[in-house]
Length: 222
Image (cartoon, rainbow, N blue to C red; front, top):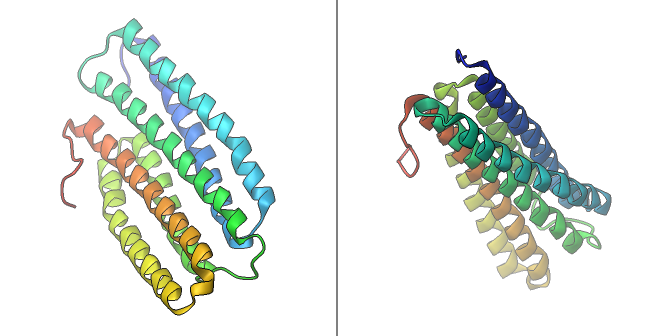
């Protein structure tokens, strides 16, 4: 969507570019964080922590750009909704980065262990779903594609089901093998953080619907 007032188009393009840049960074953080746990690789932990500072700086810069655009252009209707959506998306991306940091820090709990308390491919499957949700929600935002955005929200249910199944399996392992309590609890926190990252991806998709259709679909049943 282009406007006759080209400086505003340039502002919007800059905001979209900032969103995609930050989205790529937090996606990398999430993948590396889970790999740090699966492979018990503290080098990946260091990389996740290094990216944290970049993500936080982008978060602040994008917030500032949004506020400056509102002050300079005084947008209304769909234009204002888009800038407000960027503010929300920016916050959700930063929180995905926070969850990635939490996951990566849990890799220390498994460093000395020869194996994880659950098969790592199950964790990888859940992470893959969340990464796809994040990519698709950002693509839906860039294209203003509400059908794709709504499809992301539906996939969140599969992530929730995987979370419940994995936590149930871990609780069973705790009951049967008391010696792995600390590692199983650490893995429960990892699973919960992956699921919360999916929630943030779903939020981004819901903001797309609000920008394009003007309707707030948060907290509505899928």
